[in-house]
Image (cartoon, rainbow, N blue to C red; front, top):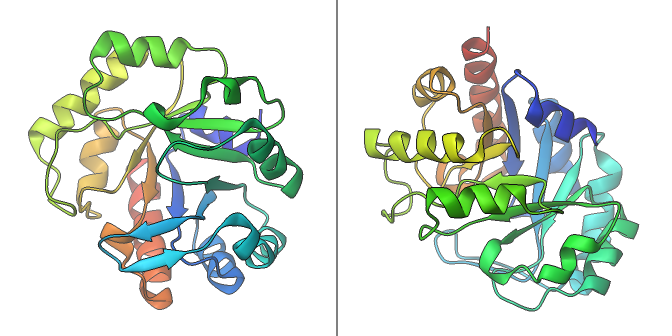
Length: 233
């Protein structure tokens, strides 16, 4: 188990940062601002940020610089559609990535047998409690990313209904796999103590709260790190 997995399973709240720029300087600044882990992307066409990133081959030099620049674990999102192969994930492992993150409905089952790299699965909103429990119990799934909240406009505030869905998800998981909350909702620092008090302690902040300006990404990381550390005391 990696140090990141140790943290995600621990009582200490954790902060990961999703970058939509494969920039080593930004990755280092985010680490120094308090990130416990970093997620990067290839084959990305971000509809809200208006950002596009190329294939792994096109981004490989920049990605190698990101991994070399930081001491925290780095994971990768290969694409948001089907097509990620076993050989591709093996290459990510050999390249130095700690985990691969995919939507559950596009994650080929064969990827679960690739050793030496962790798998984060992001179930879509149709997942029921029994389905979440079954996913968490599936051999080879290491982390569940909470993409199962009801549909809402990107960046919408977190609601009490969302919180209830998260609590139901946590109950369904039953500790079988850690749950990480991404910020498709527009989380604020004020949401953090409420979430922590309700058992949600692993956070993955991205464009909805960080924006895409490097200085804004770093400032958001600093703010959320302070909020998470304060809530975890």
